[in-house]
Amino acid sequence: MDMRAGLFQQQTLKLAMTQELSQAIALLQYSSQELAAFLENKSLDNPLISLEYPGALSVQQRKEKVKGNRYSQQDATYWIERIGQETQTLESHLLSQLKPGQMSDEQLKVFLLLIRNIDENGYLRTDLNEIAAYSGTPEADVAECLRVLHQLEPYGIGARNLQECLLIQARQGKHQLAEKILEEHFLLFAEKKWKALAKVLQITLQEIQSVSDYIQTLNPRPGSIYIQEKPSYIIPDVKVRLLNGQFTIGIFDKNMPVLSGNDMYLSQMKQYNDRQVNSFLQEKWQEYQWISRGIEQRKQTILKVMGKIVEKQPDCFYKGLSFLKPMTMKEISEELGIHESTVSRAVKDKYVQAPFGTVEMKAFFTSTVQSTADDDISARMAKRAIEETVQAENKLKPLSDQEISNQLKAKKGIVVSRRTVAKYRDQLGIQPSSKRKRYE
Image (cartoon, rainbow, N blue to C red):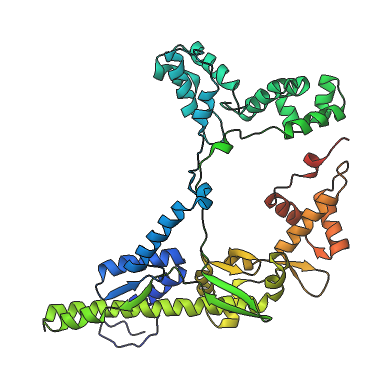
């Protein structure tokens, strides 16, 4: 082997991540909102980028809209639309239940501290000694304020754990057996060791079942009704419509700003014949072209991927997601001749407005479950079959995971192992057979 040092020329092939390629990859994985924010930031940085908003109103249109609003305000037909929505907070609701003079000023301060340490589910998330130390009040007085709080609606508010929350409600409902079980034998009841519990209390399993049915009616999250959440809206990126028996696919870009080049600014700045100005203009114009090509490439890629999804899932778009067939991103990438990561970026955080509703694009990809028939089925269909099987079971003798597996194979032709049934059951929030058993 020649180990002499020297200069040699060698040709190799390698993939270089250019700025344009990096830009195209970033644009592809942006959702519509992220893309709009990206373009707005770029328009502030690049004077050659101009954005037009399709929904923007002209000055004359704004004037006409204002006149229309004035007219509608005078129209008594729409008086109900002008009533503001009044929302009651948990604090105001609890304070309104106190009788005049029921608490002193010092007690009221402690009472407010307790309320303001209640979380969104209605549980008190601080120790009484901390409230006592902060307010300079004896802990016994803090405990008395908490006792008053526990007597107010919604019952269970201010509880320190689930056991106390349910116990407060059982006391208000004057259900003595439920109160005794929750206070003295909560773990045995929660772990459904009902035979041992029946032996301790000298009662029947049917009586415990009756208590369980009653406790199911109680609210484990009494503060949840006072959570003030603003509704979230989803703007789809793609729309699929059924016209004359054919599916049409389009990009939903009504709210997207339209990108264009500022030719007027470019021509004005070129008149200066300054080297630095020309260099700046060339750099910014190249950036505009990169972004423009990237947006068009993003649009075409999303349309191609969505088109292939519709082609492979016609029953799903006709009837709904319940008829989804097994399909992976790798299958789509191989048929389109693109990389699997490109498909992943194309569907990332994107939503499609389909004839059956608006869903995430990635919802169309699901794993394969073996079937006794020629065609395999999707995991979604297998989960639906598990739900139907559990709903139809005899609750006095609920099916084990192995029995569910056997029934799916025998009655529906779906081949899933016991472990797979257990996994899907957990994902569906279905309890094991020991927890589903009823005694009457």
